[in-house]
Length: 273
Image (tube, rainbow, N blue to C red; front, side):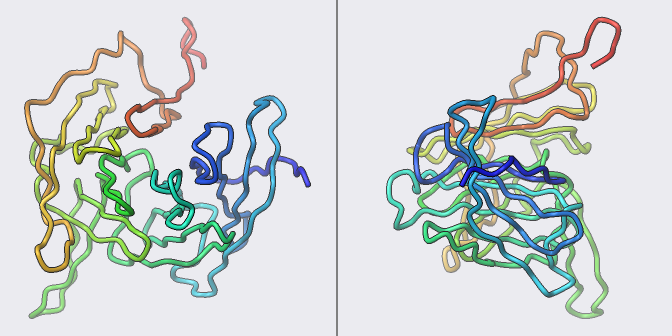
């Protein structure tokens, strides 16, 4: 049954793992006033008349971690899903004061995967996937990590760049290796990556629309837990020539494996959008 394209506050889109075709995408969103995450398949073969099919929903009764329409979302389909549906999954990560994750599986199950109460992500516009290794994907994000002093119990928070390892069961965080990235809160970041190598790049743009490109060649993992400890960025930053284009607050970063895009509104000569 073809449904009307639903309108969500803070939705997210990801490629469908059922086909390595840009015509099929997943749409995730939370209906206003509910704690329920809904998923849909959208066929955009005819972009002016997309076909929408409802897949399934997931809700949380825990008020602390429940899904919220006011929280931004980040979605990612692991490229391995295009090769084998046996290992396919699309992850939905809710950003904000408390982060929650869910996995959409080929069985049409939207499984609650994990909660991350110690991380507050700044924005989905500052969450850039840079590497993919099997079922693991590595992203660089701007976040606030809370921790407690073992002796006093006092809580502290550190804001800045962090490395995020996501897989089908958990999220782990690295806080070292980001000294080469700009320390001032940026406006937008977008990543690009290869599925055959461990290298990746991240483009970071400031409020002045000036952007730079940074290359990451490796992630140092803990020998025992395989959790990321530190990132290794190589080479000097490379300035990005955007030919004088000015990014608006509505600009949206899109990572598509080895290609990255920024979708934005065009300013007219009089400054209107």
